[in-house]
Structures are given as C-alpha cells and as structure tokens.
Image 1: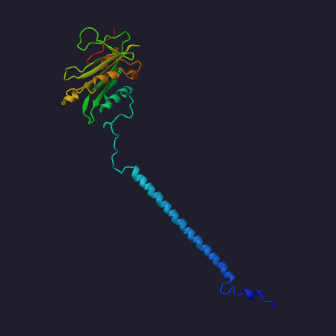
Image 2 (image 1 turned 120 degrees about the horizontal axis):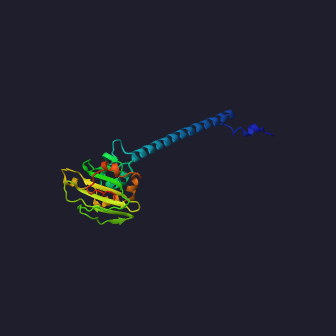
Length: 255
C-alpha cells in the first residue's frame, strides 16, 4: 500500500517554521552583519585619525621649540653679529679676519672715498676697539719702501706671490698704536697700504692696542683680492690724495 510522501516527511519538518519565515530570518541576519561591519569600520577610522593627530602633536613638540625659547648658537661661534650681506667688496675681504677675532667691523664715517676705505672695529659689547684704513696707489715705476724711523734709504722688503711688502710694528707711542703694511704688486706697480689703529684716548689700555695683529695686517695687505676689490681707476694719487687717510708710515710719492 503506497503512503503519501507528505506523511513520510511530516515528522522531519515538525517544529520548523514555515518557508516564508526562513527567508525573513536570512535577511535579518544579513542586515545585522552589515550593521556590525559598518560599526567596526567607523571605530577603525576614528582610531586611525586619533593616531595621526597624536603623531603630529608629538612631532611638533619635539622638533619645534616652545614660544619664547631662545635659539642656541652653534658651538664655537662668536657672540658677535656677522654681516650677512656685504655690499662693499673691500669689507668682504677684511671682515672674515676681524670676525675670527670675535670683533665686529663696520663702515666709519667718512667711510669711503676715491681709492680708500675706513672702518670702525668694535668689541662684542659694542666698545670701540680702533680703526682699519686701507688705500690704493699707482706706483708703476717702483717704490722705495720707507723706513720706520724716517731715515733716508729704502726699507728691506719681503716678497710673496708676486707682491713686495714691508710690515711696520705698532711702535712705542702709547697714544697712537698702529700695525701697518705696505704692499706693491710687481706686475703693474699697484700698491696698497693698510693700517689697524688702536682706539685713541682709550681709558682701558687694552683698547689702545691695534685690533689686528701685525701678521693679520700683512695677510690682508698681500691678499690679491684686496687690490681687486678696488675699482681699476681708483687711487689716492693726484687731486684725490688730499682726501685720503693719513697713514703713520705714508706711501712715498711717485718718482
């Protein structure tokens, strides 16, 4: 005797919800999973944003000084302002030597003329330390370098790199301490005189000593860049000579 299929499977499906309910349950579970995934993505995004903000804050506080914090100078640098832009090419040659002595050099009125320049030297605290003067001359026919004591005859000269020169010491006059050098380029007779004078009438004896040593004055006077820093036609010769600085050891007139 044949038993209907529905009767045979009836006990298997007992207690199960109807087919329509099963479909609704599937969609409910899918919606729950979607919402859960969305919440996780939002939480992860917020966490990443918080990490980026924190990292930026740490970098800012680590690399940048707090407001009002003074910047420290590199070790070994003098506490003296050094010119960042030097329009005067003569000063550009002299300034590094002065800066190395922890001093400052600035134009001194009247600071320049046709064939000459004049500068003031200051200590780190702004105290006057003296004057640097430099002038150029044309001596194509030779030069008898003067003797320090003013006696007749020519001083013994030294030579370096095609330049004849004589260096003159500070002397014994306590009111006019000067280191000076006169140098003549042998190729064309172009001559330069450079002096470093201690501060006149200084209350502190140390301020009366020349701001540059004799060797520094010699180094600058024989530096080919110093002559090149002047214009080709400049010179303390002829009518322009009256306005030039007075040197303790003057450059002799042309022969």
